[in-house]
Image (cartoon, rainbow, N blue to C red):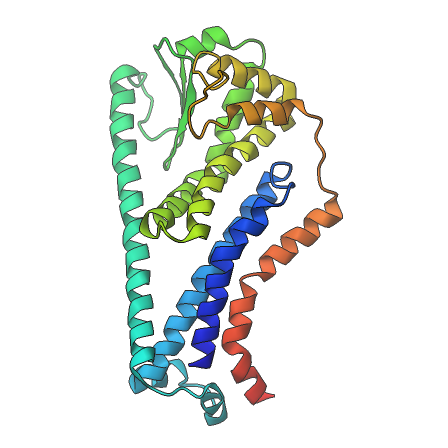
Length: 310
């Protein structure tokens, strides 16, 4: 049980320490795409620790599982793991398996809820903005809705739809509308909805795990920063910043008591501040280092077998 226990300890340390360490960094706002990658790698590493520990614990508890897991391996590899059955091995394997089932259930529920919401919103859109003659329901299109509140959003799906209200059309000037649409198109092209689904499912299923709660909160923030950067590359940082101000001027986010989770003022300040990007070499090193994080639990799990073969 040494390797399964080591994997659980490694996963627990990553779940506890990773959010604190990342919260101390100052580069995430400057490089949101890299930050998205780093967070995904950390979460994958935690999930890998649990999955590998479950597999090895089950192999230690039940001979049949051990035969399947180590079927092609030499006898020396099996001996290197010192897999001894016992109540702790069985309890660990069952607990982690139930955690995996619960995670899959939460993800399925999150996806089902999102699909139901999308269908309802699409039905509402069809009522408020009927299809033109010859227009296919599945075609990607820009929908303009009558509305007193300036707003724009994207509706994810097989054919993402961009929605903008008439108040936004009146409020936005020059290329501001194009910048807002480019922002929403950035969400659609990067499939940010899947990041939001998975992070929401993990945080809902395991609310006491710090890394999953931080993952959800950071995904909501970083995807907006990444989409801002996509739009600013085409239309300039000032244009998208002014568009954000125009869209949210009456929503209260710029007041003395902004609404919770309102990142719009910070986004505007970031866009108006001269960019201080990471150097390409450092960005590459950070991306490569993050990619190696999920490799650590794999090395811990396969270390005894590799030493036995060597």
